[in-house]
Image 1 (cartoon, rainbow, N blue to C red):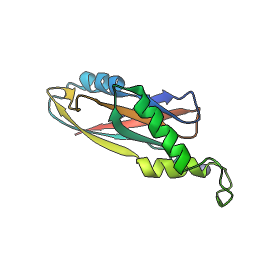
Image 2: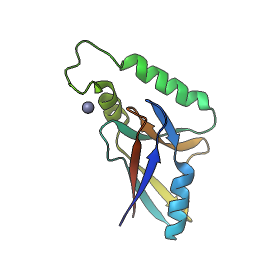
Image 3: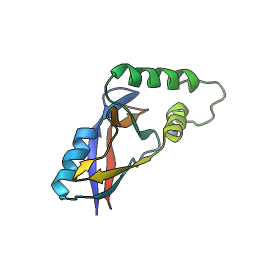
Image 4: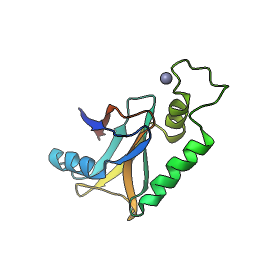
Length: 131
Ligand code: ZN
């Protein structure tokens, strides 16, 4: 079974912390020990795990991605005009695997799970598979 969940993003580029949403979904399934795969079925959005304590870390990641993979470049050929979003999505990746122990996501102290929007705002989704 795959659990599909919608995410409404509010900016062109944005990281949405989905850690609590994922933990609630896992708690409902009453799984004790295992793993989960979180997959993003989009070509201009991604998923990553990073710092959950200082919000400046996410700001810095977004700032540096914008600097290294700019929105506009005269050499982009993709006619839709969102090549930077496609490239960022591939750089960050479309899935993460997380260990579940005693019904809880087993994350490091400072870690959170982020849905990464690179071509918003849009209604998006992520898929959760428990194993
Ligand atoms: Zn495109």
